[in-house]
Image (cartoon, rainbow, N blue to C red; front, side, top):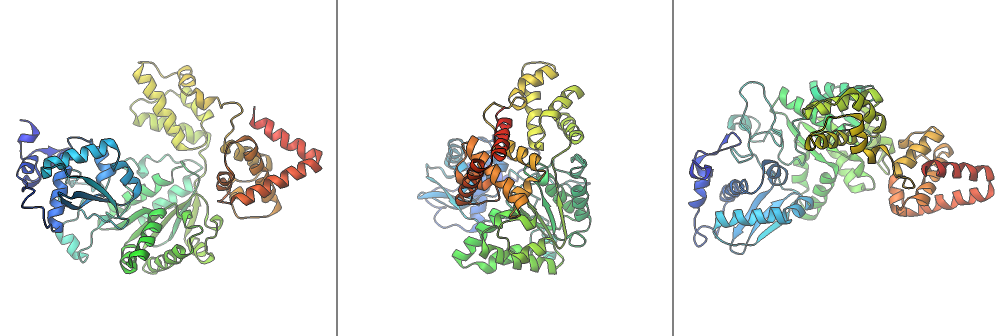
Length: 511
């Protein structure tokens, strides 16, 4: 029997109740009688029906990614308003494949060609429902956490907490990835301390390491550790209330609360949790009023022994214009850095990632890739995906020669087109300093002079604008970059040895 003809149709192993089965769509009330005034319950039911129909046009991953935190705000001949949390999601849902799927689903559910409106509401918080096309069945033995959200808790559980939801809160804007667990995190010298600290936080939240501040460059595994920590907390206690979101979302919610006069509602949401995880906390730079609000949120949670977890591209003291009292509080607990993976760690990551893809690459290939890809873990994973995908599509063995062919753009940097990473790598190596020092607010001569040289090199051989170059060095403005270029040019005219040194650096970059 076709699923559309069976009211007990199961979606990905999850039985939909009869009132949400596709047959119920055909029993929807007519446009003339039932869509004039709607309660929240009726809107929630109609949204469920829309999701059932969307399954016929979109795959599960698309539904999870773009519709998990959406909701139906209103529906009628004048239009169907679907509310989402941010403009990024709104833009995607307005694109052809998703808008077409929504229009087709709406025709089936509501029986008319009603216009679709996508509305942005940063304060949207969709509560868990007992069963939707995206829900996951509760396990019977070891508690597992759904890939995108923790299933709604039983009624008794919520009543015991005063009606509050538990688990990863629906107002979180980060979905937990089931592949990000402690047991599949590759531990090496570059990340061993950070890994041990994250495990420690998951075992005793709100105690020894509070706050837990994790920093490092992009693609080094910060997200993997933070999500592993959340999974571990929820496995130990599914009642743990976790709010996991980006700093940008915190800022947008705060601005929205100011505009709408809902500061108390905002504060209740952020201060009534067991664990607050904020990614990219460095985005608080230059936002004095938001820093003030986060300071009070931090104090409230800390004094209540609630766990605070923060991640950033740089340590607290190097976040531009961050208030001293926030810097001090961020350093109260444990500040730890994830560094670039060493050669042995890169080898282990390549072997692990290829095994997860179903075909472990030979040692000779792993060695070759590990020698050439040394910047971050995401590039390593991308190299594995490209190599195994090409080999599979062309029925070829994975060999060093194949790796050189498929990854030739990685192995051979284009001449005359150095990147900012190349410039930073060369300058930090030449002057024996760290990238984080170049990007910090420190103005000692040992740091400021190499920083000016790096800015000069960037303006000389890249196409980046003054603003873009300044962004690579801790968010400095264009006037700082102009001043640096002028100073280096002046010194080159006055000092032959200095000019020769600069020309030598330029030659190395353009080889």
